[in-house]
Length: 178
Image (cartoon, rainbow, N blue to C red; front, side):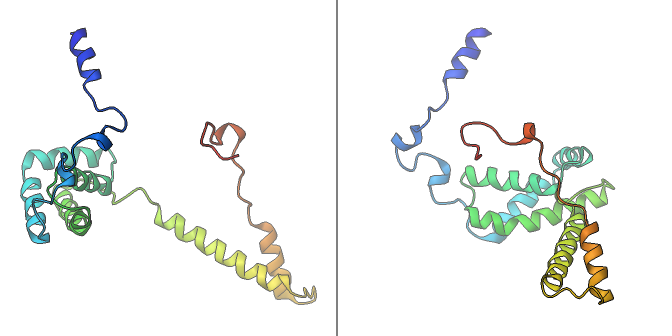
């Protein structure tokens, strides 16, 4: 058993080997097998229509994994196997995303599209916009007798400032900027 591990550990490409190998040796270096978007979509939908595959995807969704990385993995895999080009995969991805989402809804499996909290992002943008406008208003001559500017200055002072990252959380290593 140990011998098999040793053989498989060394049976991998070395760094730079792709630069010295024969051109067109890898599937993604050759023309794609499919170039029509409809054919590519039909290929993926046919593969995903399998109950066992959808059960596995449902298990991933139940484990709180968003649909977007699942679709990206499928598309990347197809590109690496030479099934389609990168741009064709990008065009097919939204269709596959919707297909998987609709199947998960039919299976009553809770799903997330991606890991982005859009409500938090919108709130942060609104606070940034307010701070920018308030800063512009207050940067001019501040007339402390003006109740509107006085209220703005109080609101700007009350806004929490961004927290600084602790020393141990800052990136370290050879490529870290500092």
